[in-house]
Amino acid sequence: MEKAYLILADGTVFTGSPIGATGSTIGETVFTTGMTGYLETLTDPSYYGQIVTQTFPLIGNYGTIPEDYESPRSCVRGYIVRELCDLPSNFRCQTTLDSFLKEQGIIGISGIDTRSLTKKLRESGVMNGMIVSGKSAKDFSLHAQPPVDSSILQKIRDYKIEHAVESVQLNSDGESPLSGGSLPLGSNSLRSFPPTPSAGDAPRNAPHILLWDFGAKANIKRELEKRGAQVTVLPYNTSAEKILSLNPDGIMLSNGPGDPAENTSIIEEIRKICEHNKTSHAIPIFGICLGHQMLALARGCKTCKLKYGHRGGNHPVKDTATNRVYITSQNHGYAVENSSLPQYAKMSFFNVNDGTVEGITYTDIPAFSVQFHPEACGGPHDTNFLFDKFLEMIRCR
Image (tube, rainbow, N blue to C red):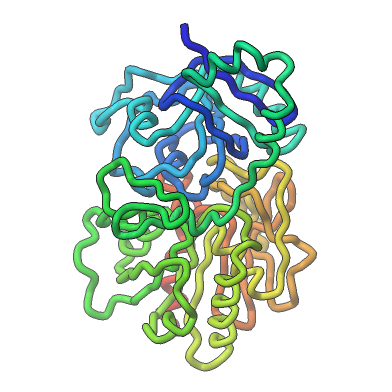
């Protein structure tokens, strides 16, 4: 039976079976606690550069459903499951998850103790890792285990996620401007969002919202269109001048991957729009995840990297105005520092588990943002109402 190995930066080795493509891959090893929504996880651009561990033991039981993808291409560096289901059962299923991984070129491993791995990441913090399978696994088993050769460990430790937002953008030929990777699923562009089911044409007086795309999940656009909005998607490197020239009714700052502080040019453009918003021609802004973080940085806040991040569909947040707790979907490794909020930035939600900032409302401009995902397609849908709040803010202005 063929073997595959997961090697962590501290030298720990997990032995399992290969799934998906074969070869070797290095990434930041993280875990997500979602019991459903593995398709949304695999196709969420926010996971760029990461080897994703599913804590739920059985993955793949409803196969793959392209209509549920958040983008046509997967940006994960690797995939880890306890057990991969090879006989899915769902009337919408088109193929197995293993076939999807192979088609997308994602190297994975199954059959390892994901509970033990998750406990290690929780105690030690997120760390880099390498998955090897196929010929690479045979070479590794011959001379590098145990202990793991120092040159391999150094290679793993040297990996760093950089230029993340740029890397998840594809041009009209379906190629990344940085990595040169092509799109395996036959779509022209990662950022070409599928039409919203039953949305129809927007009414003539529909609010016009610009979706500023830093690696946006398709469901953000769907949620806006379901509420009757006309949505225009703009690339990450759009200037503030261009955005203001389009005279939108609202601006949505999307989710995306990587360290928010790395995106200095984007943050500067957001800052310019915020300065414009201090005038009588203010444009309401709603930020989600990376958009939330970069809006905060543009307004003078600071961000920090969390020990192991928040990823999954069961994260409780409390509304500071009502004291009501909502269960949310989250996927982030960075957070806005609580102590860095200026007077005009009011914390609207906080994480019940660790107290970190989960939402900010700005009192000097019409803008608010959240760290979690109110658009979560796999659920929960507790905070869906935030899209209604955004549309109401637009109507009131």
